Amino acid sequence: MRAFPPRGPAPRRDRPAKEPAAPAKMDQGRPALRRPSGDLSLLSLLELSQELSVRLDLYEIADAALYNLLGHFGCSRGAFWILPEVRSREPVLVRSQGIAETVAKAIGGAWTRWLLDRPGELLEPLLLSELRDLGSGPDLDLAEEKGIAIFAPVTARRSLSGLVALGRRVSGNDFGSLDREILQASVNLLGVSVENTNVYNRAIENNRRLRMANEQLQELDRLKSEFLRNMNHELRTPLTIIIAYLDSILGMEEEGTRRDHLKVIRSQTTKLHGMLLQLLDFGKLLQDRLTIDVQRGDVREALMAFYEDRRPGISTDLREFKFSAASTPTPALFERERLLQIVDCLVDNAVKFSPQGSHVHLRVDLESVDGVEWVRVDVADDGPGIEPERLPVIFESFRQGDGSQTREHGGLGIGLAFAKSLAEKMDGHLEAASTPGQGSVFSLWLPAA
Image (cartoon, rainbow, N blue to C red; front, side):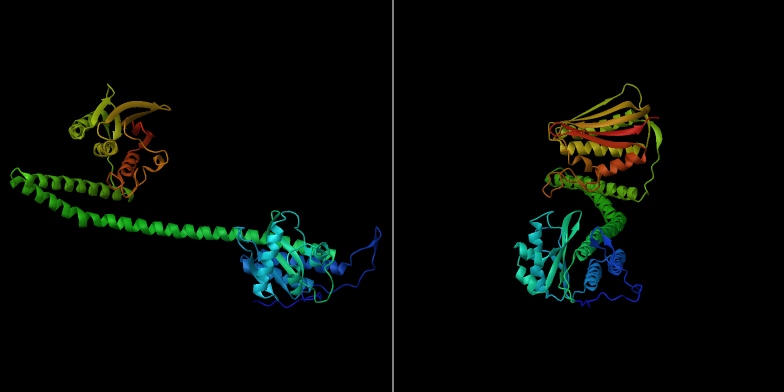
């Protein structure tokens, strides 16, 4: 426990020497306050204000405040408690002088609970002698036995935030009305200082946590980039070799169960290879290393060929695939390969999340928005739709409509994020709308040429 030597009313070196006492003047029948006493009180408040203004640690503030109060009032005992933000907890003893810690904790707990039961009523210093006369206050005997003479509630915005206790004065003098006013002003300064310090320190801690989180994100981004770079050699090359050998074996294998099994292996290996290529392209896109060669072309013509290529597989899987387009050409600025990647991703997403018997519709239209011409490509389905809370995050990488471990549909969770980034690379954008139970529409907007 840190010791605070009591300070008497004698002037300090840095204080001006006392002036001769002026004769007391009468003001409405009462003698005026003697100037030296008022000067000392004002100096004490100024000193406390200066001390609190330069400290940003709660315990340093408690030291400065308690030292100031003990010195000014000439007390050898005192304590300072702070109420935590969670009011169901006991008050925290921050500093104690001349009172055993266990006793101080008990006294602080009893008195703060008593004050909290009287919100707004007792916010001024409380003399134990007056409270005993009124028969009010908790455990007065223990407080008086430990030499406490006065309690001063510490407030912030008219709400109890702490408590200061001072012992009996060494001089034997009582706490007069001026003393109580000075004590009230002092604890008001203390309350404001504690609140400001807490706000400042919380901001510092939040900034620290944000900085740590940002550093972790940067490290994760570095590891992700390193992983994607290693993918090309560690996975792509072996998969290419496996596919080549499977094609060779299938060319020699006769029809039968063995060949059917090899076809399944070949199909799944090709699917894995495609996912890997998409992941590699996505990595290049994140690192701004993916080159996009935008040219003028007819979107309708490009997607008609895509539709004819995809329809057999989708129909075989018992889903109807339809295509409709404007009767006139739909020229836009795009790269054909990347356009097909985006639409292929949207169609795959519609097929994946729609049950058998549902319909997938690919549409191409010209549309004007605020005087700007666009080519709009819609992929609509009548599947289960997307829940409203999931809709804002479906274009984030490594996110899926069903993120549980028991989800029915596989995938890396980068398809829609990749498609959105590709669209933006071509000065377009991708958006989604959905009604649960009725289906979803994903729309690609490309600048018309």
